[in-house]
Length: 173
Image 1 (spheres, rainbow, N blue to C red):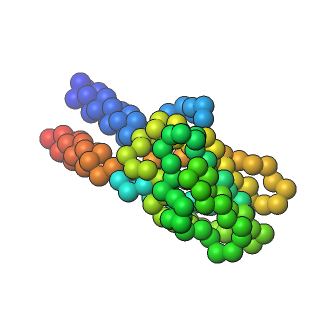
Image 2: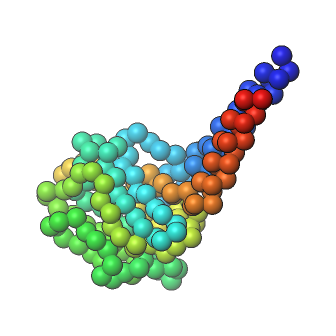
């Protein structure tokens, strides 16, 4: 009986560790959200290279026709101008403190903006860097904040894998 309880406790701790690594915490003030809302498009940031992808799968209608990313003047700047890869067509703004795009045609799916952000932000750093990260999913629809998703760094993924293997090994004994 004790062994079963220990296994359940270990499993619960492992699940809590995974949730902590993936930044599943209550929403914080500032740009974007720290939890994944099912009705918000995702801004996916890779801290190893500053890459940003915009994923419309959870946006209303799976569609984005306008987005605006801004940072505070005087802080870190976007890796701009002329680095951002915009969706086809539309009007663009590509400056050190603002990257925006709008089009009647919009886009769907995942769009890779390129390595437009500085590197090495965790979620708190990304929220501090961005003063605005919002979009609209159709003409006349309200402006909605992106969910901010930080891709776990390779070292974190390795630790997660080692923890998973330890749990599996313990389960077999």
